[in-house]
Length: 219
Image (cartoon, rainbow, N blue to C red; front, top):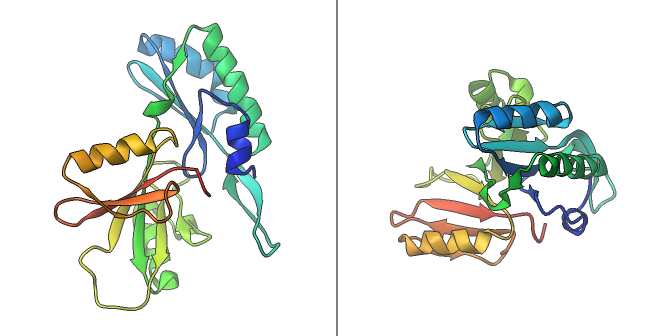
């Protein structure tokens, strides 16, 4: 698994890393143009999504190796050198077809749930969200088909049910995060926690409901 800095140093101008994967959006003039582009690059992609005037592409390796600070090795989805190489090829194909990337448009929503008993509730949420408890892996729920957002669990001390147990994690490109935070504040929100910015900044709406604006920096 490549580090965030290694991905940034790769100079992939068309692409942005969000939570786990590389993402890109290429603007097309028609659905037919998008389909031709998708057919040209789709075999190497983890996910391709077509719209009337865009194609969203996602790259990730299903079994990348991450070495933790204590030296232990963990295998789970992440960005590898293969993904960087494929990203360059896809950008080259897009350029040859006259397509322009719109990196500021990529976004990913994840759900987070506070719990003091992960083992008890993790399988339940995997079952109801994806239909199988097998989607509960490494302490998170990942839908292999991408139908629902990823769900991860934030450990807490046992306590009475708080006002808000769920919150939304909104992953945006690292060069869009400040703009998105400012937009939320201008629309009536407030920053409630920014000690770990730019990795994430917590905003609250006027009722106190919270959202984390996340990016790949400082991770």
